[in-house]
Length: 408
Ligand SMILES: Cc1ncc(COP(=O)(O)O)c(C=O)c1O
Image 1: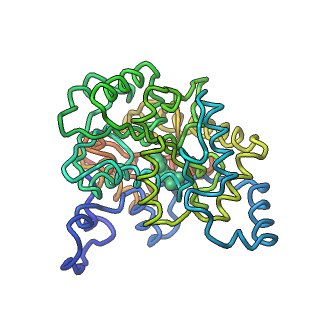
Image 2 (image 1 turned 60 degrees about the vertical axis):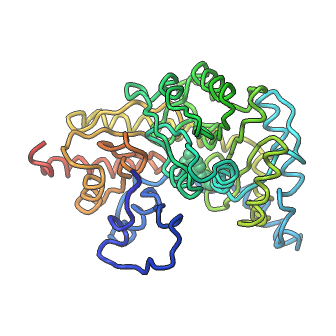
Image 3 (image 1 turned 30 degrees about the vertical axis):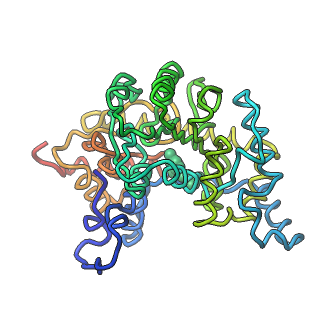
């Protein structure tokens, strides 16, 4: 289950709850964000926690935003709700090139405040109170909170722990008359899995047979290793009416702070989502849209460089974990920049992560934040520099030598 706020930042404090909606009281700030918040109160922590890549936003993107801000007053104003038409056209072109399908920039694309807003709008658009939403476990914590926010019921289907791939039969068994949607993130945060196309196709068949929505979070579409390919659900034309696919500029172009992403959905569905987009955001930041356009239309070497650096960091993280094999086992990530490390100590993941933070000053995320089968793991991100990763593992190694869990 999601971590309780009281267990982390709010420990020891009592807050006013009278008058706060049940809807909000049911959800939590994800531990992914809370652990760095806790760490900010300690001196000199090293992070294997939140998924912020270390790279600066490429210069040509920053310069395009700066030029637009200085030369065009429109850049400081709202854009059209669904976003700058030029950016929607560029996004539609990119999507149709990759997916091999026509995409209408005017009717099927909306630029959003990161993929996160797109995901929240998607869930709020299709989930009514009591509707069941199937999620793999472990899974990205915010998907779970978004379902709870919509007053839906998360139904967890474990991934296969041998390789974190989809257990399609288990997904099929989880479908009930109350099931409304499946949320899937591929490449997968937090396990680093790159799901097999044949499994994704079988899952799509189930969704179509039962008329379910698939909310496909493709934030890490550019980031697969070892010669693998990312299989986008946008490339299945039959799924079009049932698909809401979300994308992000955050990781691909090192733009996490610019808050810009986009959603692709059939016209009728997108029209409904736009009501939420308008009510909560009006539009994505215009200057960030200009930057996103520069990112898409400019040189793409920066994307390859980011992907190559992250592959080296993946290899380093795996090497360092191999050196701690008495304490951890893990599945080598094939995409994104996370892995779930199963530890041997007989404590819950919150205790493990908090002690690691306080005693070794290393930030990790307790696996319990990612759904029921996340327990017993900590999630490690290798978005930081090689120095940071090495430094964090040096500290962990020293800490483990102090035998912090004597009964393990
Ligand atoms: C799986 C996944 N989806 C969505 C997001 C949010 O992306 P954005 O920064 O575009 O809102 C993240 C960020 O870490 C993520 O890991």
